[in-house]
Image 1 (tube, rainbow, N blue to C red):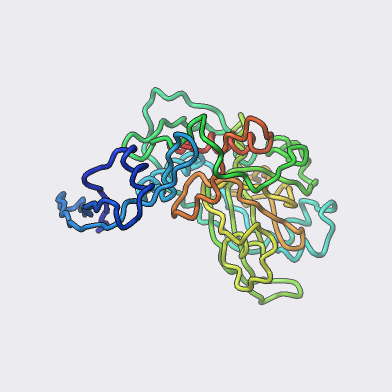
Image 2: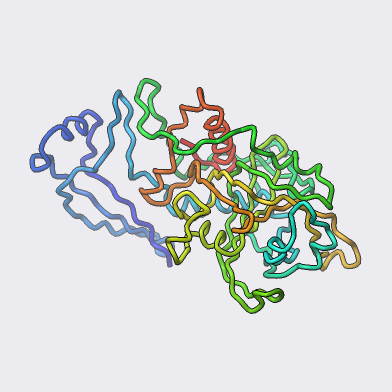
Length: 376
């Protein structure tokens, strides 16, 4: 039985009072009483527990009139609902009915020489179970749109924002100063789009950079290599479903191997090996991420049980590994879970003057729109 906790401050101070109290010594600040309300959906009752807080909420006041709590995070209920909505976008598309190639193959050949037949001969690893959370049908007034996922067309729904979840804007005022500057640098000329790579021939492969938002994260997990000189060795495996938020709604899968998988999954055991991400922070759903040096290629999925005897079309996917020198940078976190996540939420007003930040802001806004949350 799940229990939801709410923190309520009584009496609720005005904004002017908060500003005034922050200018006074902490010992002189007003004591505030707060209550934790425990609500059980099974019993439909609430049990308030009164306590006294000796300190006012620690808040950040930026120069000007902007006010933003540094502790603001999305509640668990919102995160669960967002996951359901995002998964619904591709619940009719099968991701992972194909096995994964052994990363050893990347080390043994130049990526320009990949062929579909050679790729299939090295199929190894773990198969996805295809289980995704589904969301009840939305209001029929929303107009369907066509989206492309791994080379296939399917119909999905546009979603409105949750009326029962946190949708309050935390935008900075237009006159306030910028408190959080982006730490990333993106060369738009070096970025490929998923739709542009769809024109590759099935026998082609290409090392590319992508700026995408992460829709799903599976792993990291350990698998045992079956062939090659590392046979029997356990390595890391991380699977991501991503989209670049373009007009065609393209989705693809990125598979990370070995230390790259552990690093991007935030479980790198040896700090000296943390070289493939900006700070070894685990990639989360909703992160706008800049991937560098990942391999774009077409893989042949295994036929599903409902299509016995039929050969499925090759699908575009991406591979990342230490041998490709793959790297990633988390540019923006649209779903903050803990207070420290705000270090990945730079002020996106810089999009007006920086093309790279503008692209990040566009992708973050696209994800937030379909997830039903506020991007700011």
